[in-house]
Amino acid sequence: MKNCGIFSINNLIALFVIISASFSGCNNHKTVDYSWDIIEDEDVEYEELSESFGQNYIAVPYTEMYGNTIMLPVKINGVGLDMIFDTGASSTCITVAEAQYLYDKGLLSEDDILDVQAYQTADGNISVGLRVVLMEIVIGENICVNNVEALVVEDQQAPLLLGQSVLRNFKEVSVDRENNVVKFYN
Image 1 (cartoon, rainbow, N blue to C red):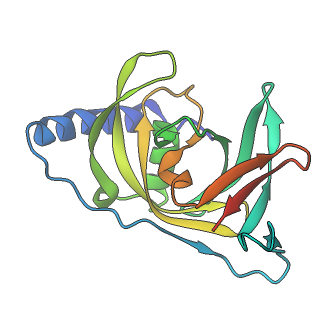
Image 2: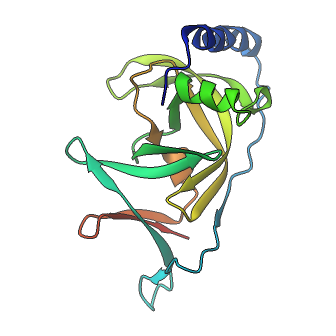
Image 3: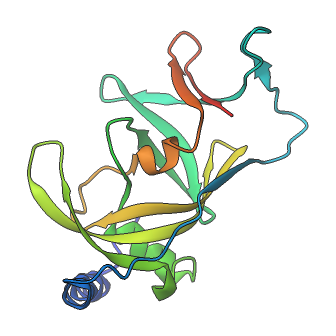
């Protein structure tokens, strides 16, 4: 993803400050309706886990980066990205650059902005991010999660994380390292 320019990033950071000031001391939050769908595709096989459980799953191939880091192909509001599969992240995270790109393309609007939220990074630091609703996240090619709350983080070097704000929509999610797939159970 290209850096969208310092002017655009500064505008978004200024928006953080404005929204933070306007939301301090009030609980004026939008309600987000989470849902997910299987995108119909005749070529996708829905494997049965076992007859006794009768659970179906969709297997999404992943690539391994940086040791054991699992990268999944996703599309956010139609834009393709690779994101880190992170069961320990409470939220799905994108950077200001991705948010600005989505905004510039008309795929993220001011109506999608919820508020400013403090969050703790893996190293224990506290930062502030812009909480937004991403209308659609497609995992692989066949799983669509709608209306996902995500954090826009200022750090351009921050990894893109597919966290619990997406993963909690599934009955179960597991990693099959033998076949290099993540299984999403419905």
